[in-house]
Structure formats: C-alpha cells, structure tokens
Length: 388
Image 1 (tube, rainbow, N blue to C red):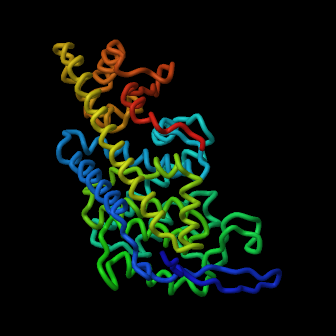
Image 2 (image 1 turned 120 degrees about the horizontal axis):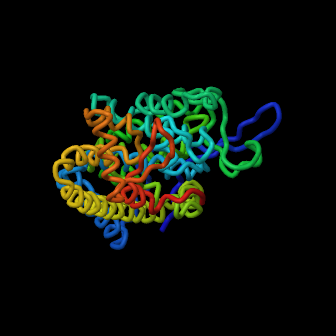
Image 3 (image 1 turned 90 degrees about the vertical axis):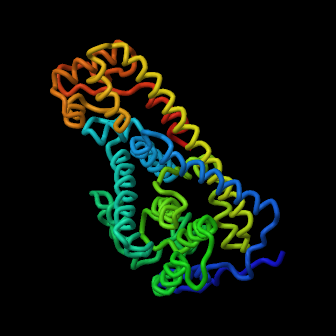
C-alpha cells in the first residue's frame, strides 16, 4: 500500500533554536482509505455494538439515571490517561462537598471534565453545530479553575506547544505553528460538518480525533477535549441519543499503543491501523457499557424486591433507593432534597436500607452523614482502578 503524506513539516526559527513543526493536510485522507474485508467487519461490529448501547436509552426504565454515572465514568477514565488519580468514588465525594481520597485538585479536574461534556451537549442540542466555538466553550469550562488560568481557557493557543521533550527542538512531536492554526481549524470544522463530502459518522469520529490531537489547538486539555469530541460527534450525527459511551476505558488499557498509532498516522500515513484500533475500542467500550447497564439493572431490581418486603416503609425506601441510582454516593440532606421527603423519613429509610445491606454509611458522625449504594458503586467501578 502506498503511504500517504498526511502533512508537511515547516522549519520554525526562534531566538533560541530551530525546529520542525507538523502541519496536517485536510481530511479526508488522500489517497482514499484502503478498506480490507477485516477492517469493514471491524466497523460493522462496532456499529452493531453502538446500536445495542443506544437501545439501552429506550429499553431500560432507568437509562436517565445511568447516564449520570456513565458520563462521570468517561471523565474519570479520560483524566486518568492524563495522569489524574481520582477514582469515581473520589469524584462523587467531591461533588457533594466531601473530602475525596486524593488531592482535591485531581477530583476538581475530573469534575470540570464532566461539566465540559455537559456544556458541549447543551450547545449541541441548542442548535450549535460541532465547531471550534463549541469546543472552545468546552475548553473554557474544563480549565476555568485556579491552576488552569495560565492556560488561556476557551482560547485557541497563541504560542507554540510540543509533546514530549523539554522544548520544541527535542520534542517527540511538534504541532502546527500558531500562524498555521486558523487554516488547519477551518478545514477541520468543515470536515466535522461533512464538507467537502459526507463521511460515515463512526469513520468521521475516528479521523477527527487524530486530526484534533495533531492540530493541538489549546495550550492544555487537548487530550480530554479530543476524547469528548468522539462521543459528541456520535451524538451530533444521531448514532447515539445520549453520551453513554466511555471509549477512554479502551484507550487507557492500551495507552502506549493508542499514542503509538496516533503518531503512526502522522509519520507513516497509516490510517488503517488506527482505524482498526479505534473501531475495536468502540466495540469493546459499547459492549462493556451494555453489560454494565444490564448488571446495574439486575442489582436495582433485586434490591427493589428486597425493599418491597418492608411493608408500609417500602414506598419511602424505594424513593430513596431511586435517588441513589442517580447519585450513588449522597448525603442524607441531598436525599431529602432529591426525594421531597422529610429528613426524619429519609433517615428512617436509610436505616432500613442499611439493615438490608443495600447502603452503607461512609461517615460516623451525627450530622452530614454520607451514604453509598454499595453494590451499585462496586459494579460501576469494576474497571476504574487509578493508575496506568
């Protein structure tokens, strides 16, 4: 197969050194992608898996409750790829103003990743197409906190960045120079919106992710925004109704290969190996999402049957149980607010649920007690151990 030229290097001179920056050619690839029967099957399997995941939103009675946890799962995984150590439990504790088991900054970063996805989704559903304006808005949400202020939140970079090494001259990869960004991003936006020609959504998501990471339009946060773009693209193109997918699970497990294949596209024009890896990742992640959704549904139904044995106390306990599906780590005060029940009724229900070993208390204090939906959390966090 003839290797493609996926871009060109430009020599950049500064006061201190000369280095070569890479400027990618516009998408789609030219010459066209080579679709072997195996690669076509890989994408067919991925699309079938996405279809099954999307069906979860209409077939499961608590799909909207699952969405809360699934979005946070992707944020945790994507942030772990960047070195953040926060677990899902740490994030949930941070979100209810409790001390997580990691530095607060780690949990805050993951929380901002959740907020960035939600902000992008809101703009998308408000009629704004996928574009740099939308991605810049997400970036602003992601980096608007004390440690992010020096990274120009919400703005395309105005200085050179590099990946690996201590400076551009010894870097592993140097993205486009600042004066080439506007043209790169103009073509990137057109591709996202099917110009100059339509591209099937899953293929588009695969190609766009590489292009975004290659352009590296921001000073920081490119990896997280680029991975959120995958899910947003699939929602924008109608492949998924809700952002239930967490592809960062696969990327994290194969982190070294993930970065190797991104680089192989730039150096060798080898889109096909990346596409095979990407489609496998989508299939694995979607299949895992369906399995997790079904396991959570099974847990919820089993626990609901046990709660029914409480007799007159069952109705209130079921209301608290339902609220815990949306927020599986919560304070008793938060449960009062989400259920509309009195504090006394919520606390009595929590006592019943504790006796049934459905919830357990994470604190041992009189006020501001924190409760965890134990089995639900355990199922959600099966693949989420921090670290490489």
